[in-house]
Image (cartoon, rainbow, N blue to C red):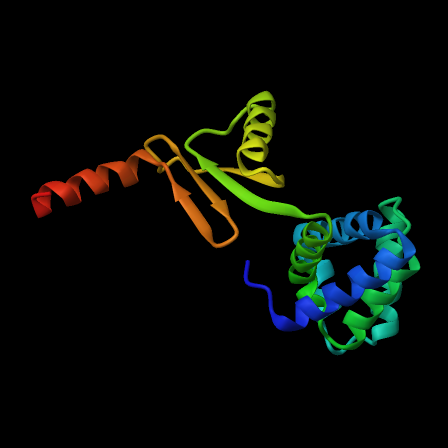
Length: 183
């Protein structure tokens, strides 16, 4: 996901204030809940993006929906949502969440990574791979797993902007290139 500079500024400010209050993880969970609700309920997202509806009504709608979902939010999250609605930037919420997670990772010295495999890995294999990668890199990781059925086999590890491609497809392409080049 591409994260805009505006979303990064909101996330940085939110992280700083949440860190001072000691509620960084709680705020993250609240943002995740609201982001998933907006993704699942297009009508709610449309109402929040509608410029004809006053900001006060939109804020009241968000509070009512969260209350129905049995989730109280912190005043900090309430203030952020109100500010986003008022500034007509509620559409940035998913980007803000992504940037906020990056802020949390940076403050905790955690490296975000993604491992792509052909099949979906079982939880015990995910745990084993995570611990082995942490040992190999000497750093704590937040490893996300994806599966791509177009892979023949092997795996692709993405750490930041670095990609370690151990897929069979890449190995076959490398062999093909060597044969074509005569190397």
